[in-house]
Amino acid sequence: MKISTVILLCISAASSAAALQDASEWFGRGLNAFNDGRYAESVTLYTKAIELDSAAAPAWYNRAAAYIRLKQFDKAHQDLDRCMKIFPGATNVKMQRAIVRSELGRYAEALDDVNTVIRGDTTFPKARLLRGRILLAVYKDTVRACHDFRATLALGDSAAMRYLQGVCR
Image (cartoon, rainbow, N blue to C red; front, side):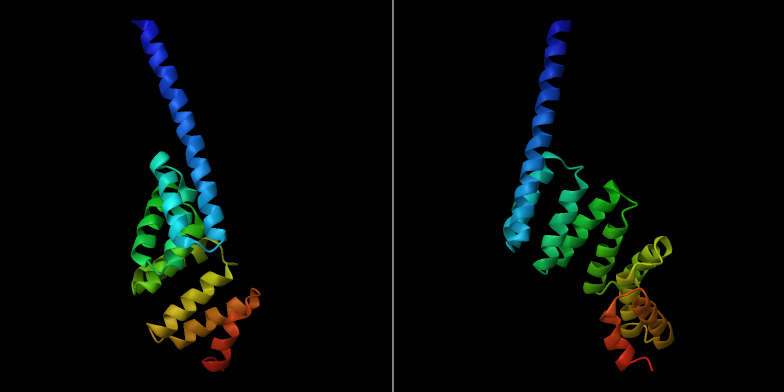
């Protein structure tokens, strides 16, 4: 009886290792498709990787990036939420989710995410730029928005110039 249990455990461990290797292969194929601009195909390939290893945060994150390119923001949001559950401290995931939430018109949630990103890294220019854009467009808070645009520029991101020239004097 004990020998059959050991054999079963060995077979189970071997099949788990094979599944992880297969997941890695599907992930690599998804990455290649994404880099070639074949976003719909990359979604399918990342999905296969996720089916084999549902704890693979990079597969969830990259599939979300493909959904963003396809303008499927609801699906991207779901994947980013899942990724945050797997890896809650990931600043890049939280920033990407803030962008998606902004695209979905979920501005208060986007602002919460971007504020968390800025608290964790005050030198993240894209976070400052997004917060400034939300403050300006949604909340009409020119003073705070211009402060963020100036900070964005000081951090080396010239994308803030169009806001500084047009809105902030």
